[in-house]
Length: 256
Image 1 (cartoon, helix red, strand yellow):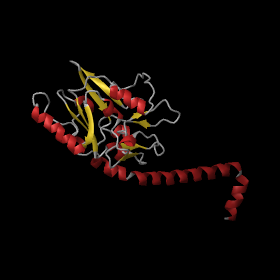
Image 2 (cartoon, rainbow, N blue to C red; image 1 turned 180 degrees about the vertical axis):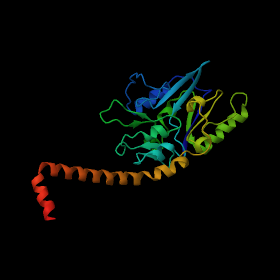
Image 3 (spheres, one colour; image 1 turned 45 degrees about the vertical axis):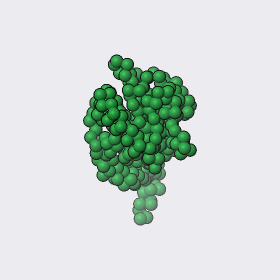
Image 4 (cartoon, rainbow, N blue to C red; image 1 turned 120 degrees about the vertical axis):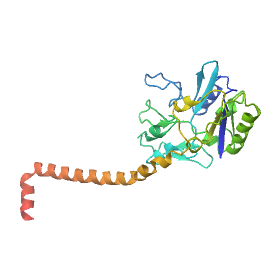
């Protein structure tokens, strides 16, 4: 499967990756919101640059988990994990429940409040490009190769090679290698990246295993609720008819 490796020591904060993403998907300029998160992501920004003290920059985007919580939480299959590694989105199936937003440990999916029919938006790892043998627009645009694209296993090997060759330059960790079962977007850094998870330790256990029981019950809940609502609708309709034509309904009851 394909993946991205971001080396924060090489990032200069130029935002070329952000610009390339917006051009590729014709994303409009951001509209400031009081409730917007301070990480720069929105329905119009699928990747962002977070600036930290001392001139440090961190690129944030969907992590494309190996076992994505957003996919397991979606009751209608609007989110799907592909064989190439990308987690993609189908707006035709989406019902706007926003369960994916609550499930994601990285806080990635964003709601598009500006549309008449709002849907969820997020990075799709340039799925259409990688299926054509190309690389994502963001990695192609990076002038310093701070973010690179390739096979996940090869990028893990490259990450560990850098950590071994220059141990004084990095924290001895590859972010995304094992957390929540592993991700397609990996990081190596000289600063702590806990800001990407809002300071919460995630552990290595895939999140879908924690929600499987509840999500398996969702289809049956929908059927049960539909049957219940249909029954209530029939009862209410019956009562309304009785109120409108009391004489006719009384004769019907006597005939019965």
